Length: 535
Image 1 (cartoon, one colour):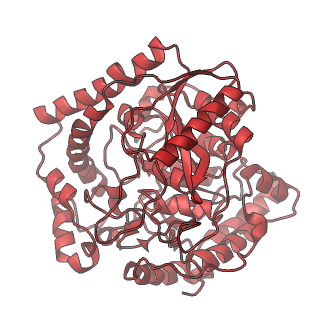
Image 2 (cartoon, one colour):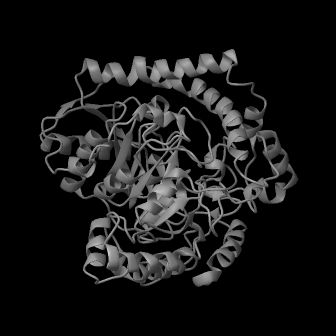
């Protein structure tokens, strides 16, 4: 595949994505050496300083990231993390460079290139497809609120990141990282391994240094899991802290967007731009007129000192090697002078699975219809329409897995159904009232910590995803925040740990994650190996 640059980026990359959709999972050869290695592991603050000193321009950054995308995403290891490039990125960067010279920077993100997950609305010459052919050809009427915030802050949209189609809600046995419009995203640490989902492309692109940061979305693990597996930081905010308007939905009870970065400091900077009330999203009304915290100010190397952290070990399927890494992380927290309470009980988390899925299916049906109504000229209006579209385009849409969850959701009743109301009440009770809230209160804790999950599994387009465990559920279902940070690796495959806690406790979680990150520095660059190191 060639490199697409300039005004033809969107058209050429669409062709690349279609070609990738028909490829097998066999890895390509890594590009040696990677171009513009000076961008590798560069932070927002470091790039902002170079921009301010005029050692670099935003145009330089756009050009260099595009070169890396061409060499690593569209050829070489063929990561497949970038679904589409924005042909206007360079002209936007040119205007921002001039604005910096004449008026100064808007924010720390002024002129910084980013990627947006392709289930988040963007206007202009990029599409928003959620990975589905059903949304091709009907652009959104306006930017998602978080995209508008990022643009106002001066961030430059490089393009749209691939994802697990429909954010992995179409089929119970899907292959994460695959979409009909974007093809298959590969794990940058071992190309035959899965990147997890649904924010697959966002995580892989950040890990491979194809953008300074990316935005992902999560309903239950879709930021945390791919971030952990790609060895980066992923922050899932409290539901209501960040607007969801203009984001293809699954569940209004749990959906949120959040930053995916290579450092905790960068996550704090991006969250500061994303956070805030939006009249288009009723969940943010809880913010009222309150001012947002200074998330960057909470970052201190002694941020764990004296903090009471509860260790949660009641999660299934976490591999033994990941548990060993987690045990070492707990010891590091003790060395950071945290008060570690090990173990603690967060209630019957295993009882969340059934009502959680029920809530998601009911809300998917209702919320999807509301979202589709915002897309002018679109042919599909309901979940039934999407099910029918997929059947009519089965050769492209259903070639690797089905749509059983779509079909189940389409048969559900309204949000006044007794079954939905009962499931929603169960989710709130088990995750909050019998789970996280009493654990924090009874043990007098500042936060909880758990292994994020296991290392990446082999990509399998025949049988679907493997099982690697996850601790994301309780916080996701409660609507509470969590953050994953690199904690080590298994045969070169990254593994993370997650800090989570009460609603709007992001400053505390960022402080803990930053202190741990700065002490351990487990983040490593990917080497695009064909398979797992040492095997």
